[in-house]
Length: 116
Length: 116
Length: 116
Length: 116
Image 1 (cartoon, each protein chain N blue to C red):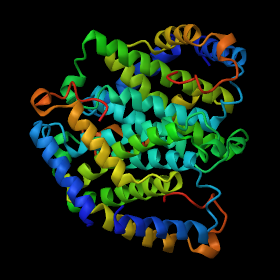
Image 2 (tube, helix red, strand yellow):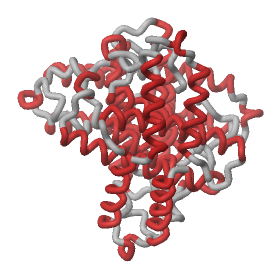
Image 3 (cartoon, rainbow over the protein chains, first blue to last red):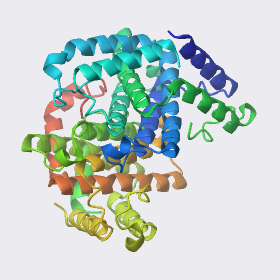
């Protein structure tokens, strides 16, 4: 795993230990939290058109960055608890997707594009 | 940003380009996808007790790893589109949380622990 | 509450009792399930434009109807467990929204339209 | 459909018309909103144990009632836009579930209980 990600995970472990929050951080609760934070990212796009979402102003972009951070922080904690290497899992999944959606067949079709 | 993450983002960009999927990958649609994939992580814990979630067997752990990968892949694509550095945003958010939840006051209390 | 909704709630109670599923149906687990099912509704719209979402074909509409049913079934079970009358709560919330978003000020503006 | 639900849907239609919000209320956006509101229900249970979730105090119960209302209001609007009768769909789904999970085989097993 990358140094940065291991470092963040170590910092998160310390953060939870110092607050005695390990008791709340079951994988189930972390998965619940991941979902809640993903919805908070989505909330910023709720009433925007796709076009508007491509041209966020700086304030919105900064707000979205904070929510993305929350998602990543829970993702790293969940991965850590389950002893999953998220970068490696992502690489494997991307390789799998390359097989499932051959470029020549999937070109320009969103309809086949499910399950990624 | 870390080398690994930049590498993954470059691979995802290539992946989308080769399939002409950029048209579907508006930040709004990527945020929708992030939320859907986070719910798929959660689905694995839906009927487990917290205790059971701490002791997943290898098959479940592998299945969760694939869903975590999907969340990360969309998170990286969304960040890339919005020109957000997710590692840096996560570091900043963690520093902010350290201020908001001082260890001595937050110890063992989940009730105050909202908004992380 | 309406007769139909009370009837559905009674049927759901019977359904869970016959399967001894009450043990799994804590309000927390029902709230988790509600979120998962809402994401499954969303999945049908993931790659559609807003325009396409306005003109679903019959197959898609039927599939969405099933997911909407799942959301409603969990909503009714959660309400039942917490002794909340969902129709009454909806009426109260709608009255509240009428105050928060006066027609003349909110007209055509999605930006102010948060929290509904 | 029940009188109460039709009445709520008519009120929601009027509410949106008076504010010229129909333009924002594509089925896609309503599905996004449904997911966001379901996550807000879930947020109230994020750090509770299942046991604690069974014994909410009145303040929490009232707060959850408001979020349940939001979910229902979006569910009704989405159904209305797609011309889906949510009560009828729920009845049909419940009948389907009775076939898929025969009481004698499903008793006490949460493991088979997916996809409801």
